[in-house]
Length: 384
Image (cartoon, rainbow, N blue to C red; front, side, top):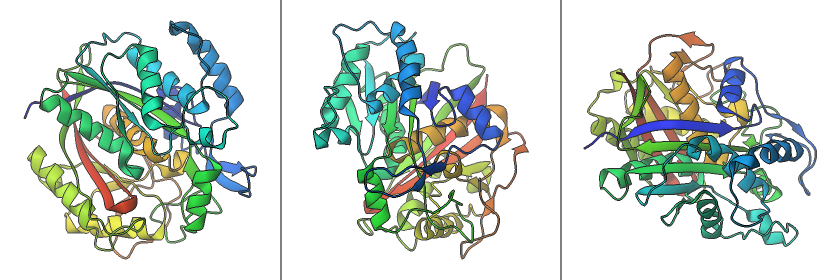
């Protein structure tokens, strides 16, 4: 199979409005998770939220780069997506062979209450088409909305579409918001933490939700001007259909996804330098991942979860965590798993507890979500 390369990428998070700002904050060990005021009828909760007024100011400053064919008003979600996309598409030649892929779990769900009058529809296809029209994409956009694996599965989908010559390149953008609807759902599962989340730790109490946007370019050609090229060496998505919300106790779906990703990449587990896992800090997710990694002979590999930096960003999680993992490869830095102190899974994992500088070339990124969804992608760095 031909190589599929990863080009420019960008992200917006509570830690910064650019990739550089977010990366620097993460390297410094900062967390964007704070105690929030009540959201609707949800009492004070810990979450990572991007301030609307700050985003509005940033977005307004970026509008000069967009030649609007008609006056538009935008929702907060759309402002995040557009702002994340701008550095990627600014110098991109969008052709009839360029695909746009949107990743989100809830999209403009706030439109359902009839209070938000920004002119957008709650429909995911309508959201995707608004973004596509704004930037002049010539093909019908594709929406990936598959629970918490959406962002990672969007990368997998783009890679496969390029390899079968459906398109030559693709742009992926992802965003989700912290809303009363989403908070009430996780609260009903008793999955929200009353402090900053602590993935894999003995005292973990659940997850924090977060807001973010991320964008990434994928091509069938090496990216011009980049000495370090990143490509997708292998990927797989396996649904074990275990439960509507609970992960498999045996880690079957994640195990199979990892094995098939490694098989496509034609490498052994020992070649993996580190794992950026889903790591939600819930009891069942972290335990399932530990079991799956032992079954795939990867338990001794350095592992982190980035949820302690900006929370669980739903449909953005796989994309923004991939982007920071690629930065780890680029800078040869292993990022610590924020909040981890003591082993909290029945099987031990090599959780990273401090920033480490070392040569890196292979990263395994995993994600798991509701309804038994699992995705694993192996990224490789090559220096030209």
